Length: 150
Image 1 (cartoon, rainbow, N blue to C red):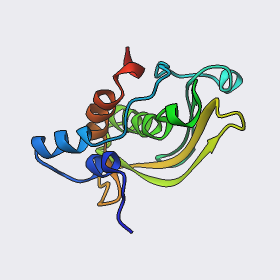
Image 2: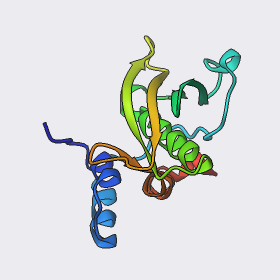
Image 3: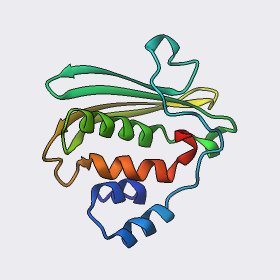
Image 4: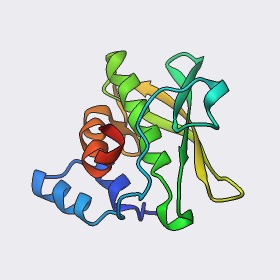
């Protein structure tokens, strides 16, 4: 089944600069509640937005990103994309070309105050057609969600 999210598709598939710009322009609107992209400890995970990660195997990590939102579903923060960003950071830091997403889950809190994304990724030098190139993600996510990188 083809990926219907143009932002995710743009991160995966090689395109011209113009094509990437068009794909990013077509993406969903920015979230209404700005949080900063930051590391948080497990102890503070549900009090402020940010990521936490743990090594679970050779070149394999579980990454969690929790985002708070004000205004309900229409202003849902991009926790999935920010989790991808963390995976790309880890790949670059460890000198890998990219990563594969092995498993993912998204949970919306009962009161719509935030979302939590859990993702298991494997860092690799051959991300393949369903994988992500780290440099593409590191460039695209801050362009799409600049309010998280202030």
